[in-house]
Image (cartoon, rainbow, N blue to C red; front, side, top):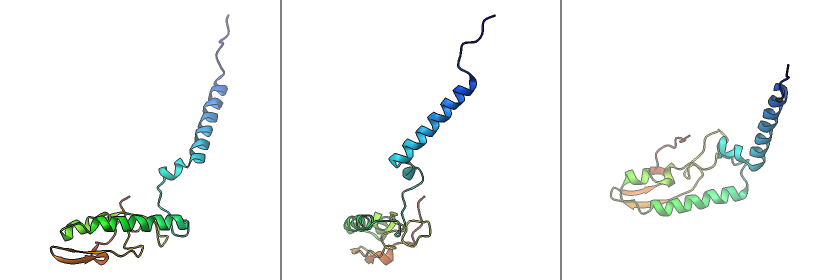
Length: 124
């Protein structure tokens, strides 16, 4: 009789496990797990560059929001709605208003500012 000439099952299983470990090492080294598990950082974890970047985004969003015509558009603006850093470490991201950024403009209904933004609800 002729014996089978394939790889033993143990060798195949070890090769698959080694490949999986290699994939996880590559994902970890490239930072892909950050994208997988969310990018919200707490202020304690955030570098000064992260904080400045968040403030810059808020300033840009404020300029965009200042072009709206109604309170509803203001409330739907990125300045009011977008999530950035987790300021207080509670696990939910905060909006520009929550980060202490200010912005105001005049719409048909009158003056609106960061206090006119609805309460922030994380979008995750």
